[in-house]
Length: 221
Length: 75
Image (cartoon, rainbow over all chains, first blue to last red; front, side, top):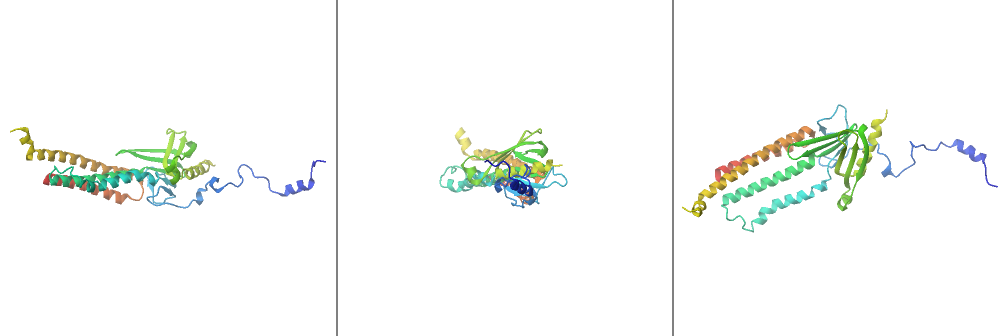
């Protein structure tokens, strides 16, 4: 005869805790659990691409009491192309000295040309470094900020409060991005700026999780 | 005096010097813009390297001005 009701099992279930609700999900792999912002340790230095809770950074539109959670830049590997170009520029005069391309010029012109070439190389390295160093993405406890410097004197600062975030996605494609773990984070907003995109940032999955953790914290009563 | 004689002497290098000075003058203007660019970046965000980057920008400008002066004097 099939079991209809077992009182001993029913009595035992009364002593057991209630099953977990949606607010307390079952144990998940650590990589999928939400990030607790308060336990994030400060991480990264002045030249890092992924800086967690930096205490030496200030930005122009910073509000009173606002805390910076993340400072992100493009992954340092993205600098390799221009570094290689700079190395070629540095050694070019030495190599070209074996080829008499400029021998028709007087020596004083050749000397000026070499000095100018190294000055140009310095400017090239400096400009590319500045472009990498100051194009940053900031995540605070209140909003997300994207600071872009385009060209020499054009700056664009996009910001979005967590209230306006509609969706978060990240992507990571290609051999180099997979090896060095960097990619894109796209934040779709309901603000005037429709999208904020973090380009080639390290650990895009981790960045997404941190931002996701901040959104319910910011919206909680 | 034919063209070959006219331009094979010191005149051609004087003309070349003028062009070099014009080019270096443009470069000095670029160096000034770089200094302003660095100031603009630091005004937007303080990231810990302000002194070093300002120093490099100013040294670059001084080097450009120095090269312009050298070209004016010695070319």
